[in-house]
Image (cartoon, rainbow, N blue to C red; front, side, top):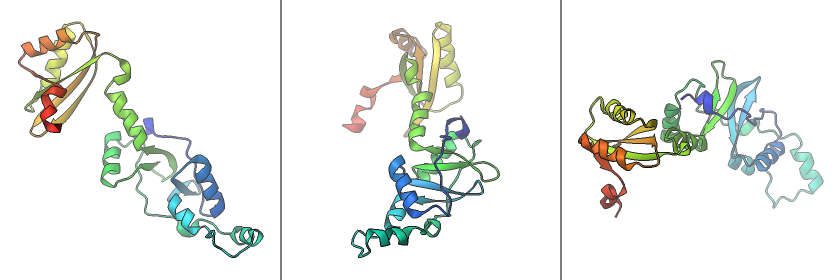
Length: 217
């Protein structure tokens, strides 16, 4: 899965010449925490809500409303643009984008093309949606998990067992816990017990909440 297939495309952006008040009102209206800043279609940085608020006049100002409006009528966001922005490309694998966001503690990343043109935005909400999709939750069926010492061929073998039973295979995902690998499968059936019994016949360990309860008790 690639970032370009899941990113948000209708991105609200501003330019360095956008008035401070306009940026503030836009962020309030759209409930945004950051605004990408674009110049000649190219991403040059962003402004965040905190900096915009701090740049606005204090409520304790002695200026009248008319004087305040006049004073702010030409103040732009140009001086508060943060230019050190981390971006990803549409062709970036979505798990790589997730790792970048995790390592840099980012809520999201602007997506730019090879010319640095802003083409979209990817965020943690999208990452969670992708996780749910990849685990096949909305496709129904039942899930089971097996634990084993990591070795090649296990996923193919278990998938073959499921296929031989005439059951449709929906999704699979792998996780690591300590020094073991956990494979989670979702299959198209209302009764998972026959599948579990068949997997056990091949000496696989089926794991569930009871198997791990000592870890969180």
